[in-house]
Length: 286
Image (tube, rainbow, N blue to C red; front, side, top):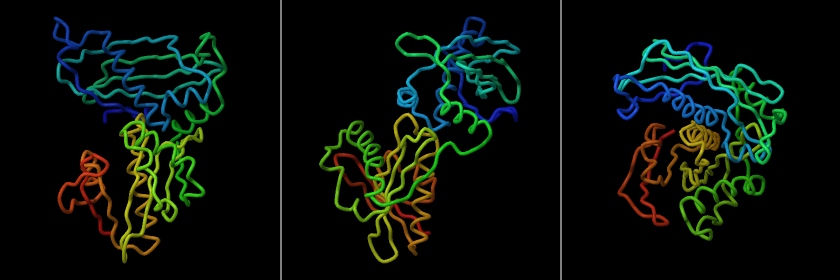
């Protein structure tokens, strides 16, 4: 990614034909859309599901100022990199710097100012210390999440909440089919963000001599493509190694099979249906 060294975050995108004007260059207002799209991914990088996080913080962010300075034009099919950094957190405002680049060439720089405010009255409120800490940690290169490993008795409330959101509410799997007795003997992993919200979970079960199975992998929808799924799998494989396992297997939803392939898993056997969703068995020697 073509992000300047001082920008930790970057979002890549490709210019669409509909964004080009009669001069065959990107219409100037689209640059703000690029920044807004990148901002959504910035919150994902913070491991914050935006809507739930703002509800917990009892506020919301509103744009106070958005300024752009143009240096060159983007054209159809260009691949652009949008960099963002949090420069300053004031009493009730948060200031971001933005840069839009193409292959190392700076096309535009931006200043974005948001105000933290009450959602009902839209009156400014002090930025919560918890949010201030998350932004500071991320910009300093610190971890914005932690992983807890434990038993069902220890993690049931948080793991169950994530699984219900993903499997029951989103994928329409019947509630009675989501829970089983295996939960009682499995090792569970839960990822928490810096606000203490559970955002991802998975479990590990011993299923045979030297073989463990990963299951119930769930990441909250707003945080997918943020790397949390990879972290979960790596943590569960580490648990399997510590237990002396030689192989890890899983029943992957077919739509997620490429994700597991990138983590070293290979498909085995034919497609099968589970809770009405196509699955395939995958394995990994460890």
